Amino acid sequence: MSTAQAEISAILVDRVADWLAQSALAGNDLETLVKGFCERLAAAGLPLKRVHLSFSMLHPLYDALGFTWFRGQDMEVEGFRKKAGVPSDRFLTSPYYHLLSNKLDHLRRRFDPSVPSEFPVFDELRLMGVTDYLAFVQPFSGNTSQGMMGSWSTDSAAGFSDSMISALLRIQSHLAIAAKMAVLTKLADNMMTTYLGGDAGRRVLDGQIKRGEGDTIRAALVMADMRGSSRLAETSGREIYIDTLNQFFDAVAAPFNRKGGQIMSFIGDGFIAVYPCERHRSQSEIACQAALAAAHKATERMTDLNLRRKEQGLGDIGFGIGLHVGNVMFGNVGLTDRLTFSVFGSAVNEVQRLQTLTKKYPHSVLASKDFASYCGANSWLTLGNEELAGIKKLTVLSPDLSGALALDEDGAMEPIYDRMSDAEQVMLLHRDAARLSAGDRRKLQ
Image 1 (spheres, rainbow, N blue to C red):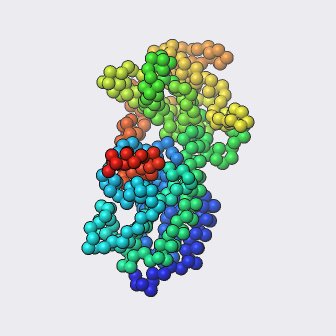
Image 2: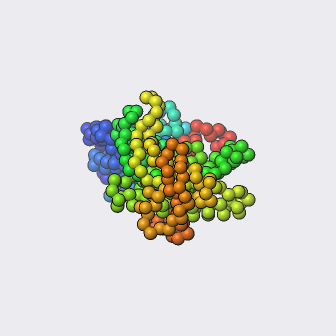
Image 3: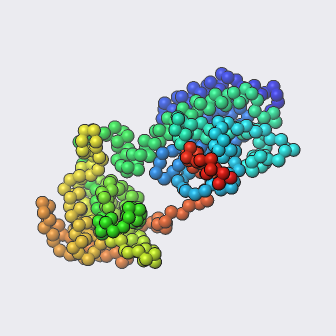
C-alpha cells in the first residue's frame, strides 16, 4: 500500500463504532460481533492481515473464547478449557506474556528483516507477510481477570501509520464495551444452562420467573442416588468425598443429560432427570426407551469406574436408579425472592420411592410397570407390588441389562485434553496475573 493510502477516514471508523453499539444492543453473539467488526475495519481501509482477540468468560468448563480473523479467510473460533499447570516455554517467550508480566497496555513492533525476531511467534507472522504488529490488554473493569486481549497485524509495506494506530486505539474501547455486553449475555446463558439445565434455563431467560409459573408436562422420570455417601463423608476427608461424588455423577448422571434427557437438579448425592414427551404412546416410547438406554450406559460406566477404583485400592461405589413415567409440574417453586426451577407432583414422589426400593431388592435399577410397558421387547423381571406410604400401589420391575441397548457411544469417561494452545495460556495467565508475585515470575522465566 502506498503512503498516499496510509491515512484512515475517521468518518468510516466512526461508522464501525456505531455498528458495534447497534450490534451489542441487538444481542449479537461474540462470533458475529467480532467477525462483523473485523470485516468492517478492513472495509474502512485498515490494511489488516490478521486479528486475534480473546475474551475471558465466567464458565465452569471454559476460561475464554478466542477468535483469529485472517483477511480473505474464514475466522477461527476456539473455546479455551480450564486447565492447570505451568505455561509452556513458547508462551513464556510470547508478546502476550511480555505484556502481562510487565503490566503493559500495548506492545508495538515493526518487523525488520535484518533484525532477529524478538519473539518466536514473529517468525510465523513474517511468513504471512506481516510487517507491523500491535498487541494490547483491555480489562473490562478494575478486575483484571475479566477482559479482552489481542493483537492487530498488517502486511502493508509502510506498516501501521499514526492515524491507523489512533483509529485502532479508539475503536478498541468501543469493541470492549460491545464485547462486554455480549460476554454478559453469554454469561447469563451459561449460568442458566449450567445450574438449571438447557430447557429450564431458556424458560427463565425468556421471563418465566414468577413463583407458580410453569407447565404440566408428561415425561419419563429418572431418580438416582449414590449409596454409602453418609459413611464416606464421616470416614474420609472433604476432598476425597467430593472427588468420589463427582466420579459417581460423571459415571451415572452424564448419560441422562443427553439424547433428550435433562438433569433438573442434584439433590445431595443424587439427582432427578426428565425426558419430556408428548401425551401419546409413540413419544412416550421414545422417552422411556432413551431413559432405559441411559440406565444401561450408566450401569456399564459404574462397572468400569469400580474396576478402576479397585486397581487403586479403593472401594466400590454403590448406586440405585428408579425409572417411571407420568405427568409432572415443570416450573418455579419456593419463596417469592428465592426460587428453584424443577419438576414436582405425585409422579416425582413415585420415582423417588422406586429409587429407594433399590435398597430392598438386589437390583440397582428398578422401574414401574407403566414405564416398562413403553420399552418394547426388553426383558423385565417382576419383583412384586409395593404399597408405598401415601402413594398408589406400584408394580416394581427390574430390566435385563445384560444385552446391549441402542445408545451411541459417548466416548471414554475421562476427559481427553489436547495440548494447551497458546491462546488458552494467554487467558489463563491473564486470569492469574494479579496473583503472580515477582518471585513466581522469576521461577517461570
